[in-house]
Length: 146
View 1 (spheres, helix red, strand yellow):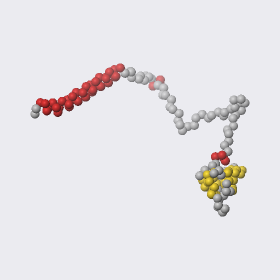
View 2 (cartoon, helix red, strand yellow):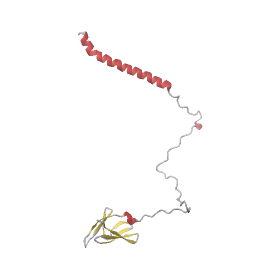
View 3 (tube, one colour):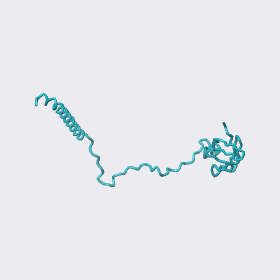
């Protein structure tokens, strides 16, 4: 085989191998230098009683400390929590008017007369544009808005 053919085939392989060897060699010296210049290993106390365990993070499934009731800055009296009116949480979606069996959709739940939205909310009467609900024993009228 001629020498120029051998050089054409093997020269690129030899160059790649030399480059890889140079990279590996330089990486080895860099790692060795890093090890020599690194921080000393962590020293643990000789007596195990001197070793303090770091505190664990808070358990997310345990309730935290009980909050103190908030007080008014001017009077110092406890601030009462504002009660939410249950009627304000009810949205009248639709009224399906029929003289014999009218129905209403409240928050996506379809009910007839006497139907219960929850244990304390019942449908009392349904008209073409309003619904009378019994909420905690008191009548509340909700009007349908187009």
